[in-house]
Length: 120
Image 1 (cartoon, rainbow, N blue to C red):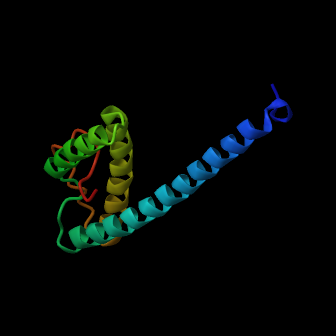
Image 2 (tube, rainbow, N blue to C red; image 1 turned 120 degrees about the horizontal axis):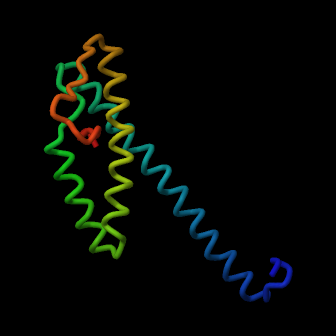
């Protein structure tokens, strides 16, 4: 069935829902940008004080917290964890780059088996 064959009221509802999805996607992108601004500041602070980019204990707490939030929001906690793990991996990459640029070179990944960071 092509879009020209869809009932007009169905097409209007589909368009309304898709517009809402587009707005939510835009909000998610802006929220991620704000989050990364904050984690960049964390990365600079860690580099300035020669702290390791990774903090596995905080990561564990954050994942548990996000899983609880997801569950209370009726979102699959496993999906939420995968998303956070992906974001954290990007954060640690940023923190390592910041540390390298600061001349620290110490990535602090000893004992970090997840590859994630807790500036997250």
